[in-house]
Image (cartoon, rainbow, N blue to C red; front, side, top):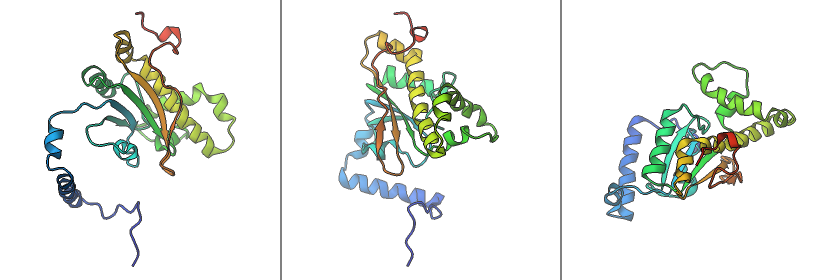
Amino acid sequence: MPTKSLHDTHHITYETLLAGNQKFIEKSLALDPEYFEKLANGQNPPVLWIGCADSRVPANQITNTQPGEIFVHRNIANMVIHTDMNMLSVLDYAVNVLQVRHVIVTGHYGCGGVIAAMSNKEYGLIDNWLRHIKDVYRIHAEELTAIEDEQKRVDRLVELNVVENVYNLCKTSIVQNAWAKGQSLSVHGWVYSIKTGIITDMKVSTQDNEKMEKVFRFQQ
């Protein structure tokens, strides 16, 4: 009898999702009868995760954390765009209300948004979003065009997209004002491999704006 593939989602229906919710409740209460009571008392996550909306990159599962431990914002290609009020509202709440200690921009290899941005195809409304990734390519065009292997070029743009969005995060008034107040806040950039499950630290972590060009720094 053939077994279902890990990626065979044809059996997922509206009804199976609701049935899955019941199984989740049963398993959670079996482990801890007060599980939901504890969650309902509030959240105090130390981390804000800005990740890709890709269904294969769930923050809690790949970091082995529980509900309540990571505050999550996801969009296509894990972008930090200064006109995105959704992202800014999440960031403001996480930093100023929840007082998170870490903000992590997490991209992933094989990102569809990055791949689409590298093409010359027109996709529709999303083209306006992808243009920000194309700008990352423009900034690093010399390095990227020198990479002959297409897959390696895509992988490198995924990494550079994370790095640039970490910088974008640091440029926000929300993060800079937190630093100015002496708030303990670190910003990081990671890339996740769907093929291996491994997270790579891009080594761009910072706790202040000293690494930024002077023109982007707020006067303290």
